[in-house]
Length: 55
Figure 1 (cartoon, rainbow, N blue to C red):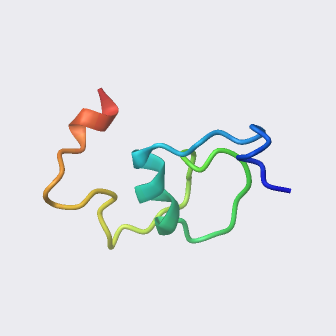
Figure 2: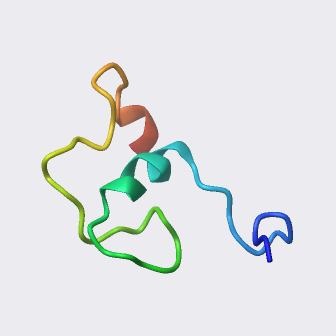
């Protein structure tokens, strides 16, 4: 069952694609809601401005 094809899941935005790999534990639900992330890697590449995603 592909949730995106059936329109059951939201398409992730650019911010959630950066934050999801930093999660230390598995989770279910919205990938943009991550409570346990690693502090060693910044969520955005150094050449991109994070403020444009959070305004």
